[in-house]
Length: 136
Image 1 (cartoon, rainbow, N blue to C red):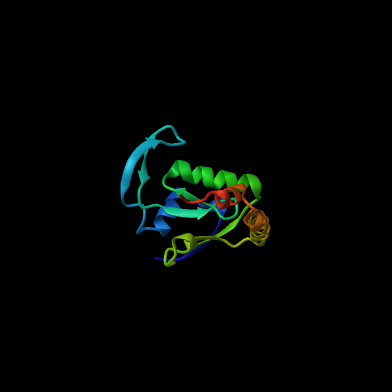
Image 2 (cartoon, rainbow, N blue to C red; image 1 turned 90 degrees about the horizontal axis):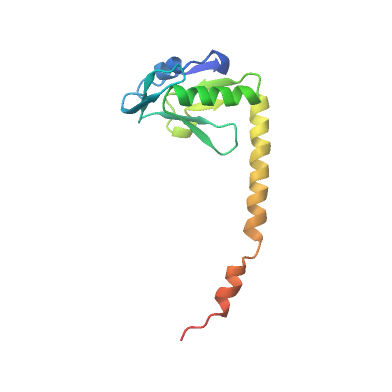
């Protein structure tokens, strides 16, 4: 299993299946694909980074792949991806190595963390109510 560095515009679902040849073996069901034909949806698929920080997109079939590709290309001109079938972690199988995209994801993650921290330090009204109840 060879790793591959490729531009997103050049990546196809077939290339993805070839790189991750140990995956895409178990068919879960079939559904209509973008070309109007029935296609396999795989149970043993892989996940790719979403355009939103902290999220991933499961690429189970050609339809999921097209969604992943078009959503990234709408936001970015092109991305350089590193496909690593030898990764021990499921979330490291596909890595975006474009600097602009990494910068955007880092900024998004900071904003998400700031929001979490804001809510984590706020006092919940339920905590105050809980203290007023007495056991009988």
